[in-house]
Amino acid sequence: MKLTSKFWAAMCVAIATTSLSAPSIAFAQQTVTLQQAIEMAQRQGPQARAAFAQREAARQHDRAFNARLLPQLSLGGSFPQYSRAISAVPQPDGTTLY
Image 1 (tube, rainbow, N blue to C red):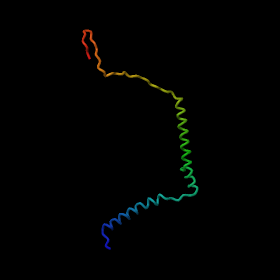
Image 2 (image 1 turned 45 degrees about the horizontal axis):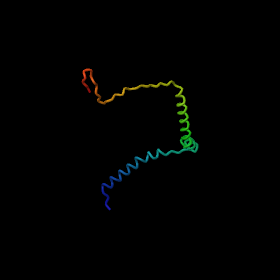
Image 3 (image 1 turned 135 degrees about the horizontal axis):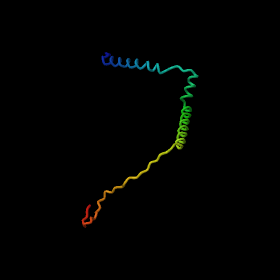
Image 4 (image 1 turned 90 degrees about the vertical axis):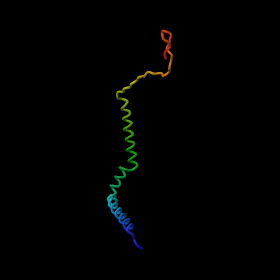
């Protein structure tokens, strides 16, 4: 079986791609001690996220409660209602203008 230049070019691209991505995979993995794993789980685990969310909800509730104690400003107004209806307006000389 004769190998063509396209095959070798494809092999070179595959090897280059693999060798370039291999260091990033190697750096992504690191050894972790048991104590570090426990600390990471306590910081990033579902119970930690739930506690964080509960704390943020309490802060927002407190902030909303304290906002009632601040001075408040309310503005009101009205605008004229214009009618586009054509109505007859009798004039003093007896004519009617529209």
